[in-house]
Image 1: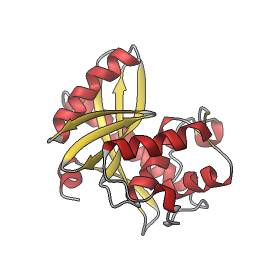
Image 2 (image 1 turned 45 degrees about the vertical axis):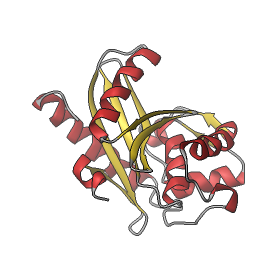
Image 3 (image 1 turned 180 degrees about the vertical axis):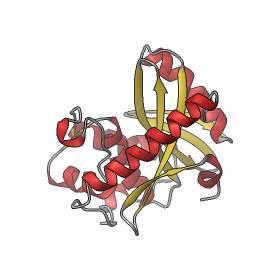
Length: 195
């Protein structure tokens, strides 16, 4: 969701580049679905999602993307899950939410990465639909519970501004992961709703 045509163009270009670069950067990573352990299956409620997030979070070590990732690239969900199984996930916000994406995807929950971008900051979180309501997972918190994606995002943008002490959000972008092709791609709200 963009506030005007200028930010829509910036959003489109930056999101297309982010997906393109991430797909190239991680072309030799695990990109196909590797499933999940039984302890992460049978998610039915928001409380179940929170329980999973609390299992994942202790093995997440926030690490800024370096020059090897041109300071911003998304690790594929199955690769971050494998890192989690092996030891720990050393990544930034998109990496943690890519890990959660893998768990929710393998529970047949419609989800996508969501960005919140302001003049002085940017963040990647996870948008998901559960029991016909839309939510946002931001690390170990879940916000929302709305019938529309738009309201969920608008409400979160206000939360983001307060929690992260940012200026107002100029644009949001949605990114899906295609497990068959092993690639990230920019997506629209309409496509997410009909997924």
